[in-house]
Amino acid sequence: MGKRNTFIETQTALHTEQQRTQRAARLAALRALDCLHNVPNAELDRLIDLCLLRAFPPHERLFQEREPGTFLYLLMAGSVRLTASARNGREVPLNTISHGDCFGEGLLFGDYFQRVAAYTETVCFTLQLPLDDVRRLLRTAPGLHGALRQIHTERLAAATLARVPLFSNLEPLERATVITLLKFESYPRGTPVIQEGQQGHSFYIIESGQMVVERGDQTIATLDAGDFFGEISLLSDQPHNATIRAVTPVEILEMPAAEFRALLEQRPNLGERLQETSEQRRAAAQSVHRDHDRSRLLTQAVQRGLLRGRYLLARNPELCAPDCRICETACSTRHGNQRLHLNGVDVGGYDIVDTCRQCQVGAECVEACPEDAIVWNEKGALFINDRCTGCGACVEACPYDAVDRVPRNGHILPDPLAQLLGPAWRRVRRSLEPIIPLEPMHHTHRADKCDLCHGYDDMACVSACSTGALQLVPVEAIVPL
Image (cartoon, rainbow, N blue to C red; front, side, top):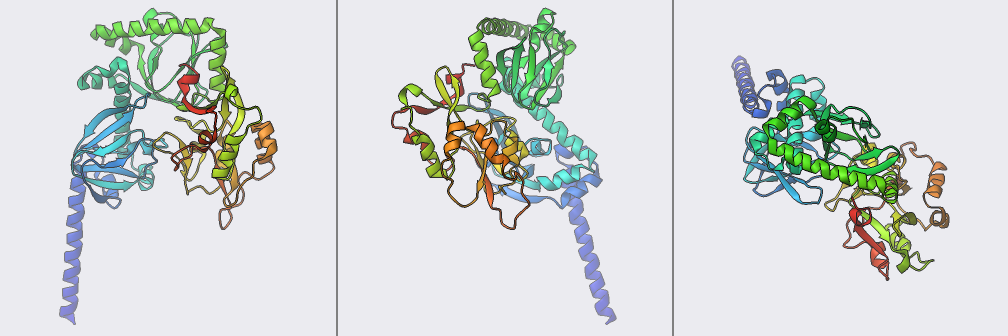
């Protein structure tokens, strides 16, 4: 009996030592990664149990832009290409990362979706770590939090500069130098970042979000990711001639005035290009300021959210019979609920149909959803997946009354009052029912909105229109930007 106990104890000790050796080897492998080399061993040790080794073949997409993420990836071998979409939809290569780097970290720091797409270039071995587990760990792991946050900030800056024509011709090392001059700042929607009449103290580049340029009570321009501002005041040494306000939550790269002027001294050609661009923008702003109709159009477009997405559903009333509702009926027939409503907003003689704007940035419904059930598809449309519980948070969050809460099973007949009164009646109808009911055993309702007929080869409303009066058109075709 004693020999047997001794044998068991010996085997247990060997197994324990083997586990200790394996854990030490895994810790050493994490320590060897460049992205983690300054993280304390105690924090790395807590990462070990979260890691799952995965292998991927070449040319495989690991995730796409605007996709909700699940994992943080640590690259153990191989190379991965990161890309992003330019404002015109063109794919922009950002950089290629290799052993020792990480990706997918943006969702740890406030992003609701992937800002880049990731593709394997070679056979790749990665460690996958569930983002939810990493988030919990970061609360008590300051070293890991700092390392990943620094990578995220530098990657955001590099991606933004690559999209800005002013800096796109710089060599990677020159771009890296510019990045060291930038500070990362976030502003909530509605915040004026610069104000008319105040002296400029920084140069700004929009990393993400949408902003509006206002002079007095006029809207004279809109700005999006990749645009810059603040340079006119710094170049002219005069106060700002307009207020620039965040329409959505924005993330901005800010360069203090002293560093900005030093950069232009070192790169005279950059200063010349900046001066030329600024003069063009100043002339365009003056033109809009004098054109009151154009200014009113921009103001209306911003207020009604017409610039939040890439496309608009526009109806030409001249081609549409006065009492025709065939598009609304086609929508209800396909989806069981009427997702669009005619007589939305008149822009240049076109009826911009009242429906979801497919917001590309700062989508309030996405931010409000506790289940991550509202996501973008490859065409840039927001659709609601099966994770929706029908809680109604997105219904309340949408500023354009474009989301409804409907029975999960059942067909909703077109509502004559909704057709007549539009959003006003939908608000009244929703006020009569609980927005966030007590959790039932089985979810009885779901959120419903236009998703440009996600999962279909056509759009029911457009296909049903026999005269071609209703079309999905780019925003700039209706509201020139």
